[in-house]
Length: 191
Image 1 (cartoon, rainbow, N blue to C red):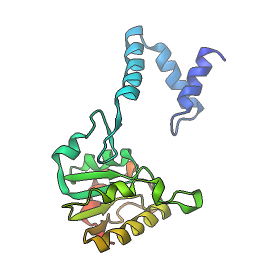
Image 2: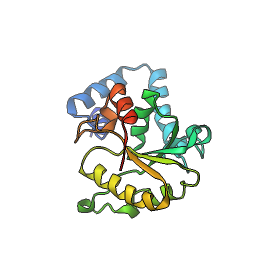
Image 3: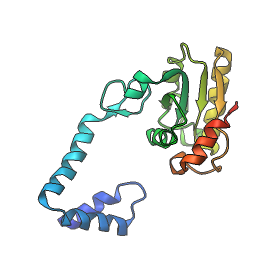
Image 4: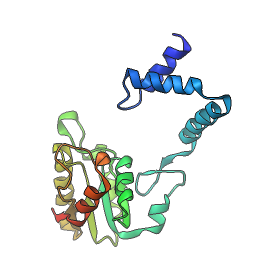
């Protein structure tokens, strides 16, 4: 396999990158000057080396505990499926609590049970928490996860709320615009 073909194959491994896009990326990299290509490759290597999961929330961080977990209001936790969902909420400026990343959602048909996602870790963070906002995707798996969490949280005396359905069913949070996400946070409802 020649170098160009290998570079295209590497870009195709990225989500939502088809052959044509991978080809454009490969030619863009080849067209970079040596300094820019070095910076690009160094950024990838440093990201892989230094970025890890925050031990509290599960988001990406370069520190053991991320800045949000050390500075934000810990009485409200927003539960999301993936780290990329946090970025979508942060763009709204409407949420001032901390996050908890499950790293997935329940899907019994695919063998994803509560032990496979970060539910136990969420339960250890509930001391002093008044509300848990469940912001899983509005699809079957996300709804199943939200219902499961609500059943766990109610006996513990923690208010469980669900983001409002300003986000269309079957879509993903990361693709929603800031206004839709802000409205969904404002109009959340008890589970």
